[in-house]
Amino acid sequence: MGRLFICYLEGRVYSCKACKAHLAKVDELVSKSFHCRHGKAYLFNDVVNVKSGPKEDRLMTTGLHTVADIYCNKCLQVVGWKYEVAFEKSQKYKEGKFILERCGRYQTDSSTRSFVNYSTDVALSSPSLLQRNHPT
Image (tube, rainbow, N blue to C red; front, top):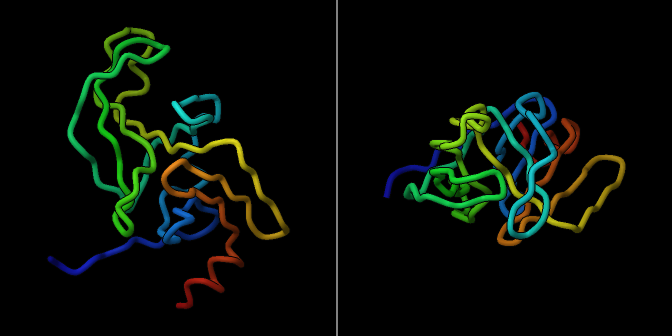
């Protein structure tokens, strides 16, 4: 086993609620109009602190895609998937982009919005919360 390196992002970020590892900056969000087996999902241009599983073909509501599940580097929970290939011409824009899954439970207070994934939690965190949890 090697040393675990985790990238910390500045500003508002989506993070794994189970382990607090940063996953994506809010600026990388493309769309909130996606769905997965367990509820809603968000499409991102780029994510960090994830590793890809094996590629597989999945028939989704928008057609056949080759995707790879993505796992949090820190806690190894599935947090979504990466679109590798879209076979429908109208879906090509998804290639190389990432989905972070969320489901129905929504919590909020003045500093955090939490989105709960079926296997791990993905949270939107404010900079003030991150400073408390990740001192520099």
